[in-house]
Length: 468
Image 1 (cartoon, rainbow, N blue to C red):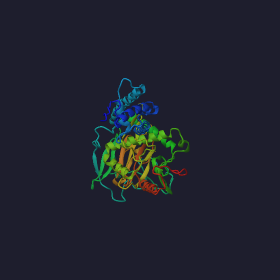
Image 2 (tube, rainbow, N blue to C red):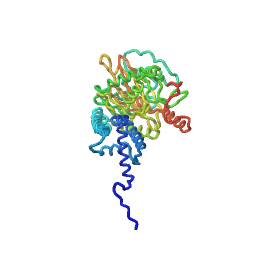
Image 3 (cartoon, rainbow, N blue to C red):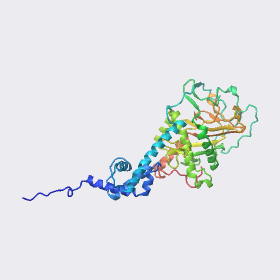
Image 4 (cartoon, one colour):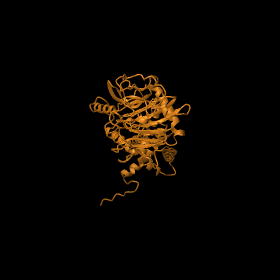
């Protein structure tokens, strides 16, 4: 009879699980000595998890460690690492564990700070749409009897002489016939500078406009000084629009020249700023300003931003985020960065002392809503009256909205509207977001070019000889 072999624990064949456990020790040691990996562990940038995942996969392949098929490799590694204890752990491994602990504690602290700031500014907390705003009803004026009249620049000063008519820069664009002195008796309603309101059509109940005073909280101390400086700086860096208003520039995406439309990021920076060392930071700051605006809108007028979100999802358009930061930053203390908030739609405008004759705009199908945020309205002597101008008009209803700092107006761009002429040292600065018909059509052409193989799917750049 052949004697049976005696199997001792030392000679027992190891299972794949045992082998993988041993390999994990090698993985820990390998990653703990990777200085770049250890640095990323302590960071907080948007793609942190992706970078950690890629690095864990690379080291696991080197040492022969089998990673789980599901979940993030780096989070699985972190979970097992924190359970890896013992008196004889190498110092590098202990330091890696400490880095994960410090990052978790820092992340919790940053999260608490962000929540406090978001509540303080007004885009998080108990907000569930519009605060208590009075609802007012207006009758639609008969066609051809809109007031102020279409194609005129509204002049609100009752006694001053008309200025020189603005020069027509682009004859192919709509441009005003002349100035029209406002007759307040012909207006149906004037909304004073301190009043918020929701205006509805008396006959149909259709929404006309929403005006929110004090859109952002803690505004004067935090947002206004930074935003005003940023907009003024950005306007000085860019070629202004050629669409018969010399005080406005487009940011985000543009549809390019009318003779050669092409969807892409605007190329309106002056040559000396195109290669500036702070170009990317400047564009990120612009994206952040619009990101804050959009976060406030999502908190206070979600029934409008839901329309935008639906279009963005179905069209797969990019956000106003040229460098794919996927976050925005408020200039508070050492800067507070918010991740996880959808950024603004890509079509944005910045302006200083903006005026526009009464007109209508063509919009993206199903989304007639535009929204502007008046960042600043002031006069050197501190006397800003109605006669100083720059009020906003929805002339189909005879409505005048007196502008003020930190005022948001949402309105239907397919209805005749415009912004009055400004004078008397008035300074007003603002931003606006909308989705125009030109953007819709050009984006559809761009998508078709990608489908046909004429463009790469991530190539949102103008050709070098194309200027906005």
